[in-house]
Amino acid sequence: MKHELSSMKAFVTLAESDSFNNAAKLLNITQPALTRRIKKMEEYLHTQLFERTTRKVTLTKAGERLLPEARELIRALDETIFSISEMNAHHHGIVTLSCIPTAVFYFLPLAIGKFNELYPNIKVRIIEQGTNNCMESVLCNEADFGINMNNITNSSIEFTPLVNEPFVLACRRDHPLANKQLVEWQELLNYKLIGVRSSSGNRLLIEQYLTDKPWKLNWFYEVRHLSTSLGLVEAGLGVSALPGLAMPQTPHPTLIGIPLVEPVIRRTLGIIRRKDAILSPPAERFFSLLLNLWSDDKDSLWTSVAECQENLPLIK
Image (cartoon, one colour):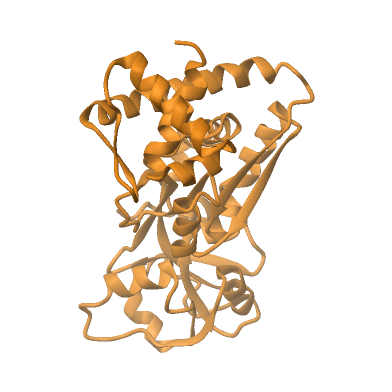
């Protein structure tokens, strides 16, 4: 079909926007031009793809059947074009991803470095956000995809797990608990506890796991970022309970991480993206690179950071 790619893009954009006016703006063409493209496509296929009303358009059964194939066709053609154009050393582009702060620190440096070696002129834009804002950025297309916790409940979001990590106690090496191999959550009642704000995903996860306990943790200090809580611990102001990846990844002269038990609380981090999203070729390449990097290193990722630091047995 003549101009098949532009017609397919018009079809997919209209299907996702539910409005000729909105779709025309996204495609940067006039509404009559969009109407002509859809009409020619329907004439070529000898079937109606949309039910039209004065306010919106909806897919017919034929349109619903065509939509996933059209998305795949666009993705494949864009991928081919990108593969050819990347031979040009001056190829430019940008990938935008939203990440919770610990992901920025631990997940991304290696991936960004390798991506930059392959595509030196493609920029990477990182938006550091909490769990809810991270999801919203992906939903509204502000970010191509995100790195978030697995407590995502939106049906439009697809979650791909990368790493499962336990919560550990962060304390100074001269703290009374520092010589213990395991620390129970209830033992934290005896010390000044430093935690992130009550609305954070990490805090909510801890509260959820401990909700049936006859005792409640007393968060003496509250901060916004896990890195801040580590700073307060290092200053000797208290202890903190945080995900293992938030701990220093090499032996630290002052801080130590000890597995927390009774219960063992773990969180899973992974990539979130819209189920109906068609990633740009640069974003698709970065997405694949990130998956491959962490898949190759999965054996070390699904372990406790405290185990890596102190050679302790993994608590499951």
